[in-house]
Image 1 (tube, helix red, strand yellow):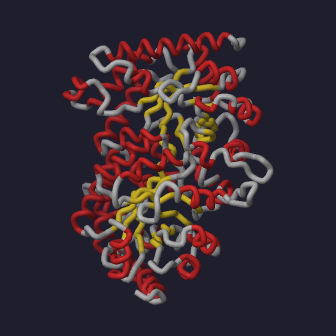
Image 2: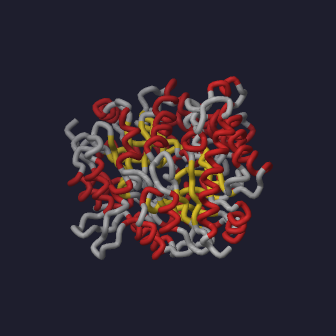
Image 3: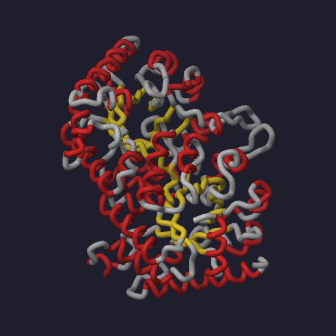
Amino acid sequence: MNKQQLFEHIKRKRSFLCVGLDTDIRKIPSYLLTEEDPIFAFNKAIIDATADLCIAYKPNLAFYESLGVKGWIAFEKTVKYLREAYPDQFIIADAKRGDIGNTSEMYARSFFDELDIDSVTVAPYMGEDSVKPFLIYPDKWVILLALTSNKGSRDFQLTADATGERLFEKVLRKSQEWAGNEQMMYVVGATQGQAFEEIRRIVPDHFLLVPGVGAQGGSLAEVCKYGMNRHCGLIVNSSRAILYADNSERFAEAAREEATNAQQEMEQELKRLTI
Amino acid sequence: MNKQQLFEHIKRKRSFLCVGLDTDIRKIPSYLLTEEDPIFAFNKAIIDATADLCIAYKPNLAFYESLGVKGWIAFEKTVKYLREAYPDQFIIADAKRGDIGNTSEMYARSFFDELDIDSVTVAPYMGEDSVKPFLIYPDKWVILLALTSNKGSRDFQLTADATGERLFEKVLRKSQEWAGNEQMMYVVGATQGQAFEEIRRIVPDHFLLVPGVGAQGGSLAEVCKYGMNRHCGLIVNSSRAILYADNSERFAEAAREEATNAQQEMEQELKRLTI
């Protein structure tokens, strides 16, 4: 999916919501555990209940890997189901990969070739040659970690060099030498508030993937105020608040209610754009 | 495995060689492709041919994930085989993970609880709370990326702050607040030469995992000269040079010859210690 298609998708849906599929076997309603593949059964119900309200899904690889082979089967089934039933959805493999060239190449093949996923989150620590193998696929995206939503983001990401440039700013600047805003997005945590203003000075036209609204405490209004650009430029993720809104047989219905609330708030924000 | 046991293992084997299981389906001898599980068949042959010459194995997750479910089955079979046939081997999941707390927790469970792997490589970009969930398991290790072997290591890792401290040095210093040398090691690429001297000033007693000897051009003699401490303190990895020493039916024999060369060189280096 290219940038224009993504923006069209956002306008059509009047939403820039991403539903994070952080599916935890210990948190899903217990009656699902008798299903042959409880994780996939849960994901399918969540997807069917929210697909008209969101523009993207973000399976978090850790949650699948923690179940070993069974988890991978559930992950692949989820991706295939999305591709078949909702082909316009933007799929993000939240993997935070990044390794030397020949290894990143393997990850890129895994996500883009084998599974036809649209994008993968990548950690920048190892630099250019760890990111570039992901950039040879047309209409596929790297979503590079810039300023994350967690407390530990302060440990290294905010360190300033002798010129005052902080690490996350260096990541934003340097990585623009590797690809433009048609192939690269950045992760910026919703908890970072006004930092969005500074980030927009460096990457005015890029899409930002924004986790941390909801369970982690970020505010959608603040993210939009400081982070939205004239093509929206935001994909805002919500995971736990939607997935675990209810723990009974009406979990999918409750998830839909949560997603509807988010979509409606986003629709209001989108009205500020002349689209 | 704790630090003392690891050192005993090194003395017993007269080696600090780690064999990197970067098993690529396109590079293994073609006659193996008729096997039910070619990746596992290859790994088992390599392990059986090298286990008396090395102290650790490092499966690189990307190579398994790129094959999807089949790859995960091969990965798990490899780990189980190692645990059963060679229980003294130190197993490193080379995964370069690192995510917000609840996600890192899932990865930790996956590698340490489910699979009983000894250690996992972790990227430091997201800071303390992305690393700590790996540290609650006694005798399990985090191997944190510090100064990697690739060209891109210069992009961010060498950036100095206002006081002159470079990012990799900050990672080394800061992370010592999270765990000591009984639970933390660092990745330092063999291509970094004299940087080992500076690194040893900050982490004199830690083990370092050193990739990049062989195919990537690092020198074992130089790594030992600048990086060895009185408890050896080095785990030197070789992947491609051993795995793909020969492409015929005698691949395992050729791998053994390469591993033997490395072990013999390491035995000489170990003689400099009074062990």
